[in-house]
Image (cartoon, rainbow, N blue to C red; front, side):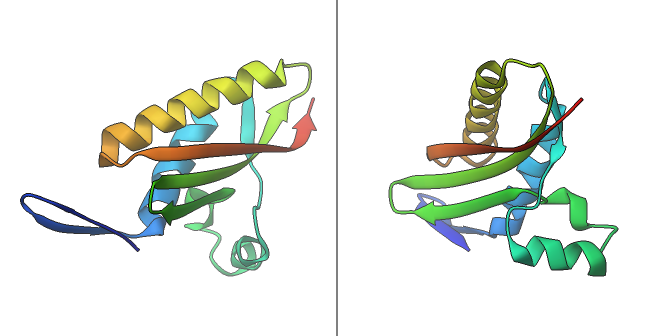
Length: 117
């Protein structure tokens, strides 16, 4: 749970909200084929809840005092410039999170787990 205060009061947001927001944004980036499982919990959930599973697949968001730390596990197209794809994702994720929530993004870590031709 991410909690912050502003002049109007206290706001609480769950990590699930952030994960689902990013899970819908990242696959639309150029060169991204899909998202990969980022932890064992997501692998188990793939078998249990197939309908809602894909919304936060491959996304991990952790709140720290000086901002959000975002980890993404992606699958890219073979032959694409990986550096350009990752930089595009970092820019889009940072803009989306800061624009949608008003919270500062400390870092975005992108892991390319596989490539598909």
